[in-house]
Image (cartoon, rainbow, N blue to C red):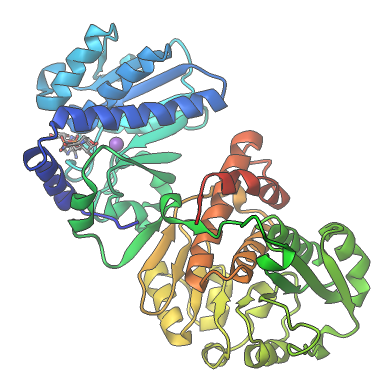
Length: 500
Ligand SMILES: NC(=O)C1=CN([C@@H]2O[C@H](COP(=O)(O)OP(=O)(O)OC[C@H]3O[C@@H](n4cnc5c(N)ncnc54)[C@H](O)[C@@H]3O)[C@@H](O)[C@H]2O)[C@H](O)CC1
Ligand SMILES: [K+]
């Protein structure tokens, strides 16, 4: 999904209001309704009813007042704080402030530390301090409020409206204090700063709220050409037809595992199965074969290989029906094997972990489409430079190899030559746990095996992986989340995206 600058967003709002006669207070009402719906989902999941909404005196605060009215209507326990004086609130924000007060919610003006006390711990805190109209580092008491929110983040879910307050909507830079949100609900189109690497510590996941700006205006609005947000609204997984059989969904082959890392290849295989692959085969060293077969489960066809380093694959005979290959999870680095595969594999090939041991030149000479899934350490090993600029380096790596590069980490980037970068914001720090990457490799391989293009398979896989991790963390906590949980929650993630 394209991202937009704050100036272009203002222009978009102006045109919606002036050319399409959509009143500004209606746009704000829809913004508030969207925020309220997300808040209700989180409250329901947490079986709670207490929410604190914190407003600034601009229109970002206006969204708060509109949301508070909806939440009160839904019988939630609502508290609204205003940073500063009510007198400063004008226009659409004032309209929604008055409407909220008529509904019986009386906001509290907070201006000193003693004001920051609550009777009940809120399950959700909504941050509507600063939006696209913010200039520079937060000033005055807003700083205390941002620190308060960040402190409460241990107990409460933090939902930022439009952008996390303190983060610049265009550059993603926080010049001073900034809210660290779990989720940012952005209006109409995601703001350019939200996906910048600088903003990753603050933004959390990104939801986009439709505030009723006509599609034609959204299409015409100039977006940022450098990168796009990977968002579930734009992702499509091929629909399973009624007359399908298991051969219709691809046969993926995964190669990997070693003594001590048998689980890696087993997890990749299970993730591929749970991501819709029709058939999943695994080749793994003989000495760990029984462990892999057991861990992968009865649905996976596991084959022992006496000497993996001497493996040869006949793609015209035994492996004729294979539709995608993944090599690397749990694998000992083995450059000759990877070189051979790059030359001989006739179907999309995903190189992960131990398979990321060849030179960029060798990858550039591959006879098949390749997807590389390095984390920053593997990226450095592969391309010889530490990762300091995720976007530029992922792009350069993809240009150099002519292949799709998935640079993992918070704010995973997917780069493909001649195309914009895709930036993923789903996922959470709980997923920084052993095996998480193996699961991702399995998911993307399954999607490649079903015939999706490398870029589409990669952005879809990365997003699903993050979504599954987020749903799992909601149930299990980030601390307790482990890689196999991501597989377990994949079905919930698939429910959230569309099928074509
Ligand atoms: N325009 C629309 O139709 C819609 C906008 N929506 C929401 O509105 C905000 C943008 O609102 P705006 O009033 O332009 O700005 P802010 O609320 O972000 O803040 C302006 C407010 O804050 C003061 N201020 C500015 N910088 C600082 C600072 N560094 N420290 C402290 N205070 C600061 C300034 O003086 C103003 O009073 C947008 O993000 C949406 O959330 C709705 O979506 C509906 C449509
Ligand atoms: K905000």
